[in-house]
Length: 340
Figure (cartoon, rainbow, N blue to C red):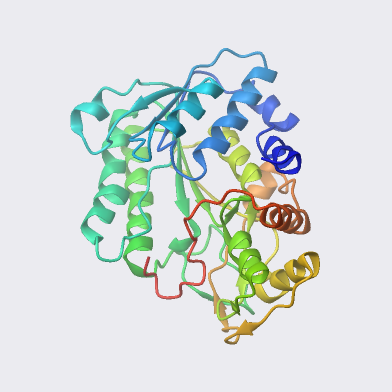
């Protein structure tokens, strides 16, 4: 890896002073369920860095099947995370998980959900109830998605938390099911929770900007039918997830997590073209509706994300042009019928 890429990676995994101050206030140990997903390493790295800088000896557990092999598990252990291999759908393995004060729940199934609907519902909607019962005496930050909202007219306001969900397709519906199950057990067991509706996190290895930037760099046309999008730098989103442990309530608190702007896909692509010295070709026409998210509530609580859209574009463009490693998990942000 080049020095340029190493510096970007180091920057992404360095905790902010704000996160360091907030982890000082979090009492008890922390368990991250579903830690081997796309966001898990970055969230873990930021958490461990913050704990070190705060001089706290909090134990952090990271649980997953680690089906991708031992490398991801070793990377987490090198950070100081105590990893546990477990299948959450296995009763005995779930029951054996350590009961700690703080839970960050990142388990979910999206890609391949079309054609495998029953498993999608089992993992996304049924499992949360079992987890909520196991961790009824904890506080839980449960990852969700902005996909629980419908497509909205781009001329209207993007949905805030006051907006009634209207999920499109079985994946999004199962995610709304996850929210409702957690909300139910928050009320019945008096469990403090926060529902964390995220879209879309931007990493240099994957995400909306990587997909658009790579298309521009490779000379492929960019479809602008889904013409507007919200994004947030993944380290900013990861820090907000950790800090959310201080904002769990009964009934469950709900927060949209994304950046402050509604961004044009065309505009983003043009910025990549400028940086890369490329031309860009567009196909389709911008629809009058898009999947959007108003995150002003989380901005009031946490402040605006630290990384701006132009900074994100420059970092992602550099990573692409330097041939940095990628994660082949497309966002399908252009999907308009909820089929994943």
